[in-house]
Length: 306
Image (cartoon, rainbow, N blue to C red):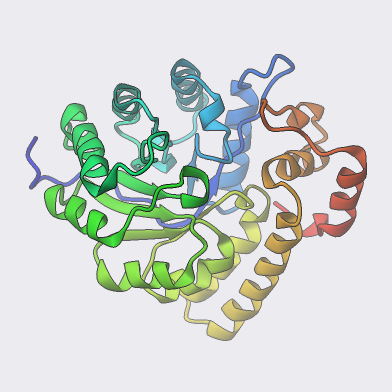
């Protein structure tokens, strides 16, 4: 693989939704509803779509299910260049297979192999290096998915530096879902050519001001219009407006964060679309009970969503 060649596909920037995966009554991905939701998010202001991540219940889906769902999105007219599919798996060969299938997308978002703990930076470097080498295609743009509260693994700055040095133009960015503002600011400062995307829209404006590219967030499934307004106000140099919009965006996000986020978002989508199938969720996750659903719908400002 010629590491001097960069992908011709522009990397994801701005507002990206960590897209929910709608399920049918048999708890299978509903390809038609999935594509419709992706089109809805793009129309609501999202610059891109991160499918098959934590919010999309990706680790509850098989490789074949993810491949079929990705094909369904493209077949239903979702622009492939807007997609940042999650391709990470504990199995190296599964990550490679999924990443090859996603070539042509804006990039791939790759979790570290999270089952074995204490493997150290050498083991993690070997994993990501093997992914790059086995995919063996200059179109690959790999984004590191840092979410230590789920994986139990820290993708430290020395490891990131090592990967960027080894694979320039291939290992090109990160989604940082740690919630650690100082870490995100450090990444922006220490890796100015590296694409940094915060994992929550509460840090959207800070990330943009620090030189990052934006955010990839679960709650953007329903806050996309407001998040886009923050982005556009910042891009236009309207700092006071951006600050006020960010404050409101953070309030809305926190009102949703008071509940288990994925079940809460699926309940909100049920209310917003009138489609009862949005309630469906794969084990081991469970939906909200009646009391918490009523609470959610009372406390979250539905009129400001989507």
